[in-house]
Structure formats: C-alpha cells, structure tokens
Image (cartoon, rainbow, N blue to C red; front, side, top):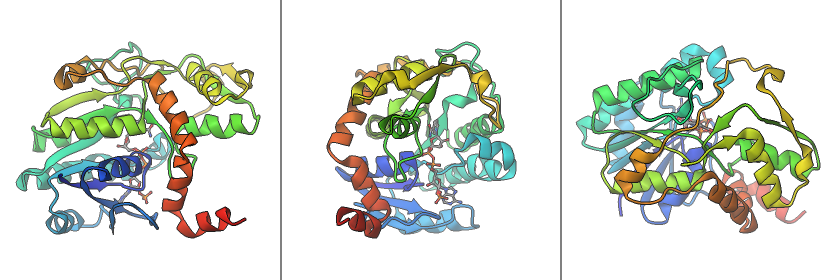
Length: 315
Ligand SMILES: NC(=O)c1ccc[n+]([C@@H]2O[C@H](COP(=O)([O-])OP(=O)(O)OC[C@H]3O[C@@H](n4cnc5c(N)ncnc54)[C@H](OP(=O)(O)O)[C@@H]3O)[C@@H](O)[C@H]2O)c1
C-alpha cells in the first residue's frame, strides 16, 4: 500500500483515479472550488497557484506517489485565458517537479494528445509535437518543464472518457445525455482519437507507478476511431437509436480554439514496458455501460453533493 496524493481530485480524471486508487492505497485528494461531500478518500482544500501551497501540501501529506491531474483542461478557455493556462499547465507542473524531486516522490504528470497537429495520426512518443492551440502549447511546455526538473518523472499523454461528478464533462456523457433524451447529436466523421475509459486509464497510471517506469508515455487506446463512430458505438451499447447520431464535418462547428484532425496515439512503448495488453476504446465503452448498470454515476453524484443526492433519492 502506498500513500498517493492526487492533485485535482474533483476533476474528471482526478475523481475516478482517486476512487480507483482508494481500493488498494491510502489516498489524499486536493480540491479547489468544488468541495466533495462523501469522498471515499481524504480531501484537502487548496489553491495550487498560491505561493507556498505546494511545499506546505507535500510536507503535510508526505506522499510516496504524486499524480498531477490539476490543469486548465478546457481548450477554448485556454485560448481566452492564456495567462491562466501558462500558470496552471506550465509553471505549476514545473514547480511541482522541482518539489517532488527534492523529496524523492514518484511523480506522474498528465499531458495530452493535443500536443500534436493531427496531420499524421498514430503518433509515437518521439514524433515531433506541433500544437495548434494555446492549450496544446501550454501542455507541451508543461511536459518539458517537468522532465527538465525531474527526468525520472512520468509524463503520460492521455485521452479519456467516462462518468464525472457533474455528468457533463466528457464526450461520452455529452452523447449519453443527448441520446438518452432522444435528441440528435452531431458526430464528427473527420476527427479521430484513441480514448481510454477513465477507469482503465486510472488503473494503467497506477501500474506505471508500481512498475517504477519513467519518461514520456502515450497512455491511450491501442486502436482509435472517429468521434462519429464513437457516438454510434455508444448508442448501440446503450440501446439508443443510432440514427440520432448525425454525421458532420468539423468545419461546420465554430470553436474558439483550432482543433487537430487525427490525434490517435501509438501505445506500443507502454505495452512493451508493462508487458500486458492495454484495454481499448471498445472495451472502454463496455465498461462505461457496466458502470452505469452498477449505479456508478449516482455514486459520483452523491460524492459531489451528498445532500442533493439524498433529496433525489426520496423524491
Ligand atoms: N478531458 C479530456 O478529455 C482530456 C484529454 C486529454 C488530456 N487531458 C488532461 O488530463 C488532465 C485532467 O483533465 P480533466 O479533464 O480531468 O480536467 P478537469 O476535469 O478540468 O479537472 C482539472 C482539475 O484541476 C483543478 N484546478 C484548477 N485550478 C486549480 C487551482 N488553482 N488549484 C487547485 N486545483 C485547481 C480543478 O479544480 P476546480 O475546478 O475546483 O478549480 C479541477 O478539479 C489534464 O492535465 C488535461 O490536460 C484531458
């Protein structure tokens, strides 16, 4: 059993990772604006951008492992607020890496497939990164800041979907919410990705720490698909009308930040290092459905807001 500090434990990845890790480890999760009412792990409220927040947190928590899921992860917000993106996605990880290396704490820093321009697809770790937007640039600079300060740290480039605290954060929840109400949803036929179910991703990050790996890894599904195919696969698994998914091209949507076309990642380096098969997007959709059957989204709702969940139960 290790003592794990999860930064950003109320985010989509952070909450699922902290819950997965709590099964076998002692977990402390940091929260910021959102408070957690009934988390199955210890929480600490902190603004990680405050001067001295990090050293104080690390000295108090004394973790063996540190996983940084805190970020400005909204691509369009990064375009609108580049200074905040710089502070959260570049400077914070750099400071974190310095503090972690001083204390010999194993560090996983979470990065993204959006460091690539999406022209090629099936990107390997050594392929040149050429981000298209402020978010991608900030995440790439964050990776470099971490590995410069702490070369033994792990930087995991990820993409994921799953159930979150507010039921609205991930692409899977977007499609689920629309299709379950018999509403149509646009599925992009010219945007490709290779996402993992966030719970599978969480288990892989813990395996990476157990195996004491270091350096840059693509932690994604070994196979990818278009966002349209993802929506259709989800509709089929949940028994929704797949005709509700309308094929569309990305040019019909006006985003604030430019988006890359093909962000599928090659995961052979990770597969070789762990010596095991990595779950893929198809098994992830199965898992998403199984979690729904087990009432997992309601459990998350209860963690986010115990009183509201209790009220709903007795309505
Ligand atoms: N979501 C995806 O599909 C995706 C894809 C590729 C890579 N990633 C990467 O995966 C990681 C996790 O993403 P996510 O989607 O889970 O993000 P998220 O849901 O937006 O969570 C980010 C967390 O960071 C916390 N945070 C922000 N500012 C903070 C501050 N000043 N002090 C303390 N905590 C602060 C937020 O707390 P508050 O909201 O309370 O401020 C939030 O809980 C990020 O590194 C992201 O770049 C995500």
